[in-house]
Each structure stands twice: as structure tokens, then as C-alpha cells.
Length: 179
Image 1 (cartoon, one colour):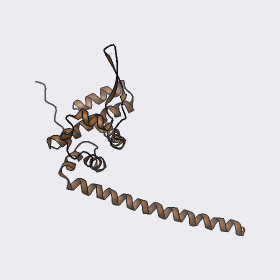
Image 2 (cartoon, helix red, strand yellow):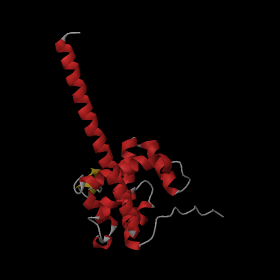
Image 3 (spheres, one colour):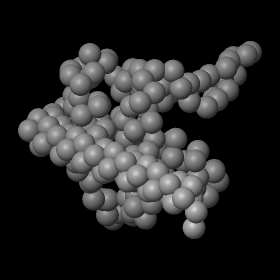
Image 4 (cartoon, one colour):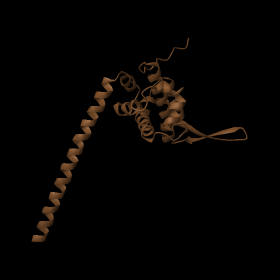
């Protein structure tokens, strides 16, 4: 090995060590922020109720609680969905409405969190034997997987609005037996 090769090897090792040290520092900061989010979600009563919704975690909860301190500011859940950009666009001609994709106008960060939460919840919710599970299985049979995720996200956001307005935690209701 020549001197130039040894020098390059030493420089490269120093550079990799420096990048690894920076990466470790960022991991530590990320973990500290996650602990802070969890502590905030546990301290706030409304945040504890929001965490009871399937796959709505501390990150989504704190991100929703900051701008939406009082959910009654939205007259109904659809207003919250419009603010998030999770409502369907409509094109009406000749009195025949045509529903298009979601509008994607509004709070992009929160919309993304609800969509990722729906992505995480879809696997477990589609296996349940309640009305939501049946709805999701039917939708999966006739639609693309990502379309089902985007259909589930507004449902989770509606539950979040109702949870904040009514002041109750989310509880899955058992199916009533048909007599």
C-alpha cells in the first residue's frame, strides 16, 4: 500500500466516523422528541382520548391538538376534513355529480399523518367482524389498496373530531346479535 492510499483510507475512516457520530446524535435527539410527544399525550386529557382511536399515536395526536384546540370550531366533521384536505373533489355537470379524488388542499402534514395511520390500521381493522371490518373487506375486493387507505383516513379523522367534541374515548362497539 502506498502513502497516498493509506492517507485516503485514513481520511475516509475519519469521514465515516464523523458521519456516524452525527447520525448517533440525531438518533438521540429523535428519541428525546418522541419521549416528549408521548409525555404530552399522556398529560393532556383530550390527547389521551385521541390515542384510543386505532393507529392514531402520540405524533398525530399532538399534531392535531395544537392547531385544533377546540374541535367545536368546526361545525361538523366534514369541515375538519376539508381543513385537512381529505374531502372528495366534485365535478358537477347537468346535475350529475362526479366524485373525484381527495382535494389535497389544507394541512398537508396532518393529512399525511392520518393517511399513514390508516395504512397502519388497515391490516388489523379489515380483519375485525364489525361493520368497519366488513366495509373495508368489501372495499378491498373492488378497489385498489391505496384507494382503501385514502378512504379510511377520513373515517379516522371523523372519529377524531367526534372524540374531541363529545369528550369521550373511542370504543369499538360490539355487534348486536340478530334475533
